[in-house]
Image (cartoon, rainbow over the protein chains, first blue to last red):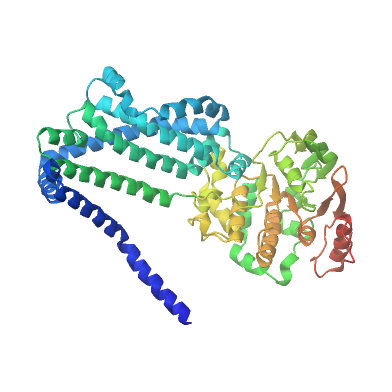
Length: 258
Length: 300
């Protein structure tokens, strides 16, 4: 009896502590940031959290800054849409037909390992400076997790599910549509989540190289204007948006997992 | 008469909930309509209606079928007929090939030699007219119970008739959980949903692969009664795989005992008209003979 009371007590205390751990971790990070920018001499001091918070508040009060956010989100959405539109059907085919998988595995694993930024010169030659080049580079990064995870999900789908569908009278296209694709949805969402993360990360260098708008561009522009405190401020915005995008995918994954 | 018409009449005439309670558990009517070809015929169909439908042609003919997995011979020159309207049980110990035989009837597996014909046509692959109820319910978790039941027509490129889907849910007493996700169902309910999904395709032949083996005794008995009722009411032909002697005697018109013999069949026991297995002397006689066929010492 005593034991159980004690046990409840300690586990309750742990739950309380658990709830605050993420905030504590975040505070430790901010503390380290403050420490480094306070004790260090020179230009690093300009990245101090207080100066950055100041810059952040100023940026958020400027309507023109939101245009950079929107254009970045637009490029991200475009690249994600293209990655899905190209990656999903390829992934389904590769996952369903063994010969398609054998034919593409080597190629895809090879392509996946080439840094998307290496495509930049080619992108500029083809699309010229602008959104086209940036989106192309992003797609070259975001495509692979969607293809590979979709294919994996489809090739490892429960045999029983397809057997039932076939015994219910389904032909191959309908079995794919009604059973195989929904059955592989959790793996597709995992691929989508990885792709979203990669696209959002690649967005920043892509905008540094090929365009003159967006959050990536703004980071470089702040440096050129010697507005150093704005750099961590924009980084915070980038982080918050990226985290939110990932959160949405995590919620979707929680909802659709079987 | 199509299954659709039969189903409409069946569900229209009787109140399923009432029927369910009447036939539940240990009630005396547990096996009241066992002699389904005699007593139930009068309430089901007038003779003039059924006779043109019930042909002399067997529903299934297994013609000198052999099945081998590399060196292992499962069946050799197997001959078996399933009569139209018959409820045939395939009984045998684990590994005797009863599921293999059922899968061959379903067209999920192919014989190494010989031929299987269903209603005169060779079985070459799965066909919705030979509906299978699997050992596990295998409902699709991303679909509601109702959408699972409606999937067969969809997979065949037809728009599901939702009025009929509701009638089927009613028939298996799942009318209140149509919108529920399959994960929320109990094992017995999931197996009923699986049966309704198979029935939605209007099969001529129902193939059951030990559908109750994972259920508790009470649920199993209730579902056995329901299977008999549904198969009788819809006037279907059924092949039922089981390793449970009582279940085979209770459900079947004939029990095919599979064993280690080269053909695969140790013997066939006709149990048509038998009473309730535990209580009636007839059933005990059947039981003794079947257990003998299984090669088990009865005194043990």
